[in-house]
Length: 176
Image 1 (cartoon, rainbow, N blue to C red):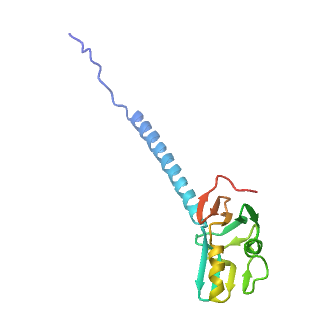
Image 2: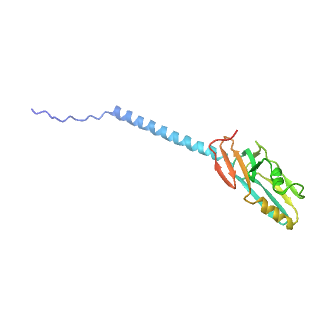
Image 3: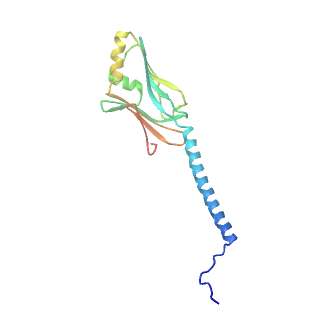
């Protein structure tokens, strides 16, 4: 009698069940990690603020300010204007540096640290109501490249952005 030198492979159901249980568990873990990541991104997206400079001119009236175009509140961390290398912490100070004091028909709104812009809110930081012959000179100097509005703001989770020269960039960390 000749013995078969080949061994027959025995199929063990317990090994197959164990391997399929490990595969299903690993798959469930991967799906859970992906879902958690997606949920976290959705959570941040629901509170994302997006600040923009807004300017409006009509006849003898001009307004310049900020608007939150995002879906969540924007918390102001820093608000400054830069003009000729100097920083000014308010619209009134920046306006006085450019034009001097005493202009009639000029209004200001202050924005301070920790001010919260709700979604869709806008504030005119500067308003001008004066004859058309004067207002054009004020507008062209105010909107010139010599003046820069620098705004740092955050969302409710502490993510920060900087708006400077009309361009918004995300910051690695928020200033104190």
